[in-house]
Image (cartoon, rainbow, N blue to C red):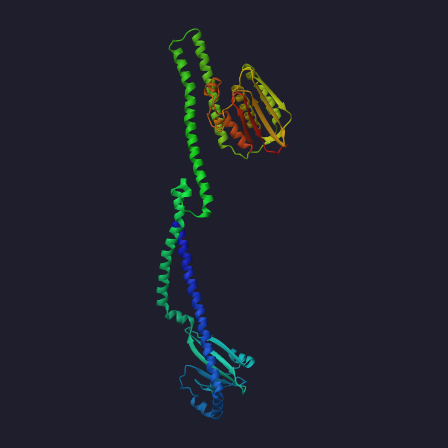
Length: 454
């Protein structure tokens, strides 16, 4: 990135040097042209005021024959050439050539302009581009036109003669631009490099104000990645531990039976324990696989038309025997509550909440499931009169394998993944989950789904 920025700054600065040089050359040459034409104008007016042009005309008419024979004043070498032209375009006098042999000048632009406007000018380039001829014309009182001309260097010849100095100057400027670009690149990227080196203490870095939101986002993402990595590591450790417990029990009981150390009722009791551990192991594996599936599932999956109340009612009926076995009264309230959602996930959500409410209840307690519309949105409530959740633990109950009462969880066969699955399903459905719980009085889970319904 640093090299790329440095190269671009170098390119921009080099182009700026070249464009500035060419622009200045064009401006200076324009001033130079105006200065030459202004000098010619002063010279022309000086000649007209001194009546030199009139005298020259009289001399030319009087000695016309001799001009033809001697070639005019052809031998005179003057940096300024003077020419007199009559209204018909005939050259009456020329300081550098034989007027009688010169072409008609009526079509020359500076001549036409002088006859039309009183004065005129033009610049004609030579074929070699080394010199330009500057012309200035002035209409005299006698009706003739006085033209003065001068050769001067063209812009190309000026540039060519100045090329060594120009080359050295441009090289020096480009070298200076390289040094400045290198310095600016380092200064520009220094705050960003500080952020990268000290992401945890952004407020201590002297960074650009515009980069603060970006840096905060990067920091939060960095923290999230570290948190997720820690969660995954903890999850792996918890899975290993949770799998180890029933496997150890199965291995131990089967070893006792296999070695003949158990007989009669002990064999039946050990076999029952092996069966329970195997079921717990299967449940744990199923929940772990399901949670992994929910981790990678698309949160924008297409939903179908379902009735939240009917799903709640079916789950209550399915769990009645389990509730009776634990002396818990399980009931459902509400009415038809159509909504958009994934049927399998919603059934799983209701089942997990009801199963938790039964497992963490007291003998003679109640579990009430309610499904109805509230303010146009489908709402599911699962209330119990169980042991409740202490306030300091309420923020962590959706973590994987987290249990408030570990002894009860294991005795009821819980895996510690039920509420983690609930949280994922709620997120997939873009819903909100609320918890209200008091120790010794019970717990209520409230899930508010999106308002769109059938």
